[in-house]
Image (cartoon, rainbow, N blue to C red):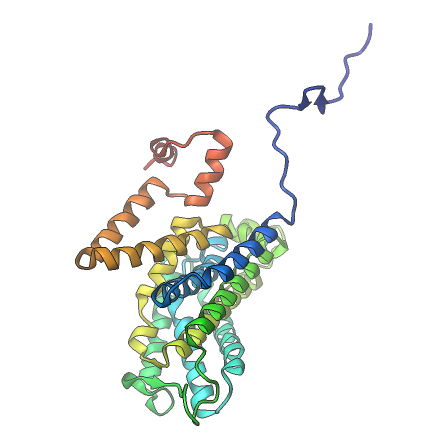
Amino acid sequence: MAEPSTAAPAETSAGPVRGRRPRLPAWWPWGGGILLVLGCLGLQSQLYTGQERTVTTVFMFVALAAAWNLIGGYTGYACFGQVGFFGLGAYTTVVLMVHAKLSFWVALPAAAVVAAVFAAVVGLPLLRLKGHYFAVATLGVAEGLRELVTNVPRWTGGGSGATIPSTGDRAITPWLGNDGFYLLFLGIAAVSAAVVALISRGRAGYALRAVNQDEDAAAAMGVNTTVAKTAAFAVSAALTGAAGAAYAFQQVTIYPQRLFDVDITVLMIVMVVLGGAGTVLGPILGAAGIAIASEYLRQHLPEAHDLTLGALIIIAVVLLPQGVVDFARDAARTRDLSLLSNVRRYRL
């Protein structure tokens, strides 16, 4: 009696076994990212001044959301004081350009380094906290930075603000103009997304996901959780500080009330949650969607802008609690596009 064959049928004359989907090549996400950047470069020539500024703001929030996603989405530590690194990068640029007379192109990477070092120093004790304790502690750090900036007016201008010389003989680096800042923030957004993508696809990304799922189990499996968390916090702060440095030079005159506004952190979190926490594409989609919706509502419903935008965010969070990217992934796998089914699946 012949023994039954144990070989798995790979293909038939009609083609590959049904139910198996071909895997995308490893270079596909990078190719898509390059095409997206090239598309944004081509879009610039089609925009008038107001639109160009709006898209520049979108790029800034893409960078900020991607940076927050690294610590909040992948690592699972909800940092409510992320705006502190944004303001720290901005005021580092002010001090270096106004007092040290350094070029903006020197101040920009220096601001990222200062933010990263500061995050590593404060992160060592703060990252021992978890949940809302960590969130409140980081919020306190941001408020402390704002008070520090306000109380050293000799270096920062204090509550009266500080101005970076951008024209004339006093300008160390000439102001870049709308076109220049469009390219600058596009570059920062692209670098931020690329850094997060590289980390997420490597061993560091697996370590951060392990910390997010179960930190004690990750430590038992040999993951140095302290190093992983602190490094993620520092990289996230560096990207945020770079965005803050570019924003300070773009605005020319800055004030601590605006640079350390907690609403900026709230926007980062909402963008990541709506787009998809712990994904590379999620913060990009979330930042673009909210920034564009906010600008549209500001133009067409100026009196009800905040109320309408808040209502739309609440509806989106209720219907898509896992974010747009994960919803699309689940829908492609289950072929179920029903938002009601999605709500029931997450028991909301």
